Image (cartoon, rainbow, N blue to C red):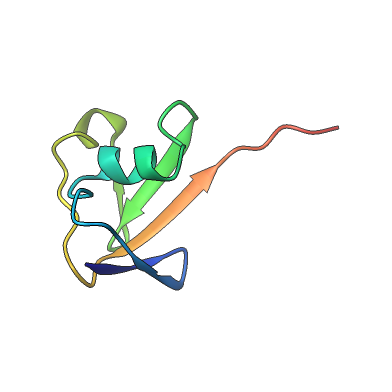
Length: 67
């Protein structure tokens, strides 16, 4: 499956079918992340059940500390 991830084409393995699985595959599952799927913000409680389909547009915003 191919999605648009932060404006770039991203090929996903067949195991990635939900937002939670996408975040895990990117090692972001334990971070504070805002997920937008097809221009709609998805609530964290829905990550496990929210499917990702071929051609979806996903935007991920995560916070990075620094000083």
